[in-house]
Length: 296
Image (cartoon, rainbow, N blue to C red; front, side, top):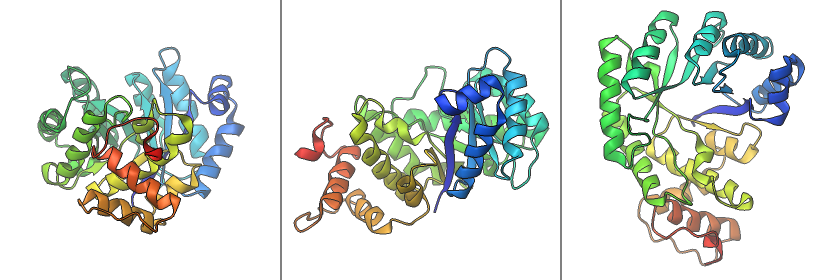
């Protein structure tokens, strides 16, 4: 079972985005309560860049959400002033706040890592380096080592870090996605005791809408097999939440067999099981991506 970080309270969402801009607490508190009821373990508050009025907005949003739920919060913005403003008003009811995220670049680490000690919060360590998104597992491991060196110097324990490998779209970066998957297999040994997370739906960006759900579902099964401890996902998607919470183990075990290299016999299987096997092979690089992979 892994933790569900619900991504739904987002400035880009028509429903919650408008409420944020108008400082209308009702829709946001309604969603926060519903996401809590539906099994979210944490809520991600995504303000995007928040260049104008970001600090004030984040403080208002943190207070608004904490009136409706006791769940810990991810503070998700690239505006460092907004992050710190949110940390100043956050009340740790059932766990610390989490900065989402700190890139593995010298500038962002120097700016943001001190906040972890100052406010007693945790952090998402994003494997985004000076050259941008890493190309493979080895480049991710180099960035990880760089970040671990900096956090160790500041006395930040690995248990406070949620490493994010950066999931990329299988539709356009299928080979690079294998690097993400391999890195997640390595992570428990490279950073023992750390946590991990990812923006799950990135894997299906660029794929037809009707195919995105199965890509997200199967890739979550694969990441769980690799040892991921959480994922940022749609908290209103019952299927993906059930996978995260170990409630679809038959399908998860089927994907695990493909992951382990078994040549799974699909004859006699139903359509859902066959589609899961085909999608697992696609995401693991056993077959080439096309929008018609389920029809082959």
